[in-house]
Length: 379
Image (cartoon, rainbow, N blue to C red; front, side):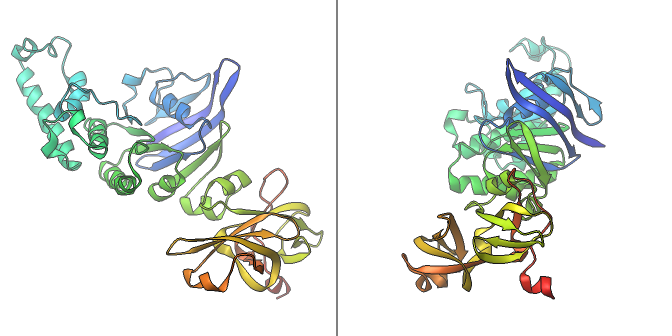
């Protein structure tokens, strides 16, 4: 059974186009992250899937059903918001049980005191309490059931919001930056808990974030959005090592990928300034050579650069250098033991690993697949 399918979604607010033809498929049980800078349209797309925003054109399918014209309550999706959206006057038990109360009890049966006297309500309430207890136990908040949100930490509130989402077993989960209000250490812990919860529940999950580390560590696939378009969809490894657009290459990775002005000769030879670095797979003329910080290092020969700054991170050393010919900045990620082998103000020669180098044209489109080393090309 299919999960979530979006067909050519377009959305405008007045004259402003926010989404410009987004098509995307999320398989049943898949965890997909929408990642991109603020204002790229990812939250608007999430709200359209949820039914909180109407499309200007296009179609939304969930579990093989066209839900484009359905209201949010009829789409069988659960959404976890950035601010958790808990009811402050209700206990944890009551907050988690709200979706079940709304679905399983009529308006009359929900009337305080009087509703509880109606036939069959007591049995319905028992099943609701049992389902709420199961969800709370799954999230490790069974001991907090009688507390109110003001008595909970940020991480506990986030778990309550997740409990309210999973308690009714929806077809899909939609999560809009649910960890952004947590401190850094708690975010790391909680994201692994969300992944474990997703695997236990098995529903399709769309997770919106601007934090690339969340997207890369939690997802089966990542969709990179910019300017109302999805630029690339793939596994985290594919997005990182094989970006098809320079904007994707620049956005994913910390520190950001190095970008150096290059030239591809008609015979395929690639040079950065006067320095030959390899042989391009296709194309010729001006290009941009992109190389990850861990894939460029000091060498006996290469691109001349002056070291400006070092950052010691414990597990690695970031060396900031500036290319002498062009003034472009380059960051190298080196083993920490190299710290005393490079000094501020020193001129070094940097050599990109040709097998890891990526070539893009002036419009940011990928040129060919990989760059070969000169030795490999001649071999």
